[in-house]
Every structure is written in C-alpha cells, then in structure tokens.
Image 1 (cartoon, one colour):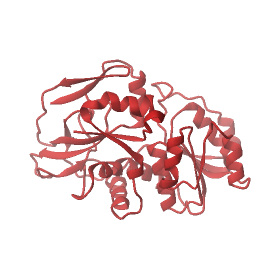
Image 2 (image 1 turned 120 degrees about the vertical axis):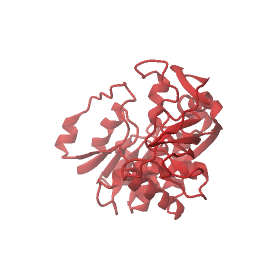
Image 3 (image 1 turned 30 degrees about the horizontal axis):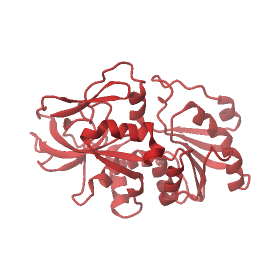
Image 4 (image 1 turned 30 degrees about the vertical axis):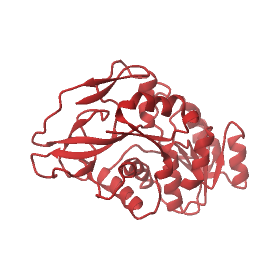
Length: 325
C-alpha cells in the first residue's frame, strides 16, 4: 500500500508498506479522504522531535470504508469517520477498533454524504465539543481570533446558537471574505486596524463576552484578555505547539487575573456525542461547510497540498485542504 512519510521538514516522500490485516478487535479500513489540520503544520515546518516521522503521521482527520471486520460489529462497505486508529492517516489503510462505546470507536456515516462534506463533521464536532462547557450564547458578543477552518466553524456554531456579534479576526484577506458566509457579522484585519480599538467600536465600548483563540500562538493568546469585558470568557482551542514542540507559552496572567476571566480549554472530543451532533447539523441544513473546503487533491500530491495550506495560503486562497485516495 502507499503511504506518505515526512522525512525532513517540508519534505514528504511516498513509500510502499505492507497492507495491515484485520484481527479480533481491529477492523481494516481503506481511507477515502483525509484532511490537513492546523496541528499538522508544526511537524511539517520542523517542530517534530525527530525525522523521519512514522509513516502516515501526523494525519488524523479521515474517513474510509470498512474492508474487513472479523467481529461483525461493522459490515464490509460501511463508511466511517475514524476515531482511534493504529497509525497516522496519510496512508491507504489503517486498523481501527471495532468498539461502539460512547467515547471510543468509529462513527458511521450516512450513505448520501458528499465525502468532503461528511469529513467536516469530524472537525465541526471538535468545535461543538467546547460549547457543552460554555453555557448560554444567545445575544453574546464574540470575537473569534483566527479564521482558518476551525475559526470558520466557530462562526457557524455561534450563529446557530444565537450570538449577537461574531467578529472574525485574521490577517489573510481570503479568509475574511469567507467569514460572512460562515456566520461572521464583522471582520477585522489586524494588519489594517487595531483589533482592540475595532472591537470597542463594534461593541459600543462593552467589549466581548467571549473570545475564541483558534490559532495556538503565544502572541494571539495574549491578545485575548484586552478584548474581553470583566468576567468574560476565553475559549482556548488552538493547540499550543505552534511556537515550540513542548507547547510552552508565556502568558500575561495578570490581565486574566485582574479582569476575573473564565478560561475554558477544549481539545476533546466525545465522538459519539460530538461527531453525530455535527452530522445532524449538516444533514439538517443548519450550516453549510462547503465554503471552507478550498481544495481537494489526489493523495499523491501531499507535498503540494501542504505547501499550499501552510507555506502559501494567500496565493492559493487555501482554507481546508483535503486529500482523496
């Protein structure tokens, strides 16, 4: 089978591996789609502890078709969103547990999903996961720092749940152009306007009730507190490994402390609850994920896909890049 291996920073290589075999408790899944995620970027850019990385790493957003399930819990031909697997998903086959427990195992997909659209229910599920911790959103004023695919799905979820203002912040123009389609009521380009000043103007001086950090940089984390009103809520979603592999960030905690802010960290998810909720929202037409799917490329073009997504996103207007097998 074909697999992609990150052999050095910014260098993918296609290799051949032996196809794995299903066994009791582990079914064989043939990958159909796998998406690039912002958490793949640090490894591509050189923040892995060592290279070459394991074949298939660090792919983790994928769906595929069950080829063999010895236990019979899944049937051959079942299409699943992968959750729990034995190797990175940038390869043609993986083994996945056949359990059906609430917090483990693969999630069945309806048969009428477009594959790229169906795959987005995985990422949307991780966003929805954070809202179980949040409480009321109706009439809240919210800033979303980062308008990548995660930030855009926060926009859409906030719109579904009744937020008053959804203010998307990003330095890339093409992402700001997509933001209103996904629910943003306002957009701010930090290269053109002072973000704090703009948020103060939009909110009439009240500042935000909620700020979502959907990037994962030290700089953007420290932008959050000044944008919040006293007793506001900071949702930290961005995985903190963009500046160093260890995820160590220097935080101006005094700002958080003196404003008495509530900080919610969220990484999740609970797949049976969160992914299925996301699938329901998509199939019921509550939101359209298509505006964030910017590219679908053959798996063999993984090098080009990573360069488009992480080295030259403005040039290619890249948002969510998907690889097809």
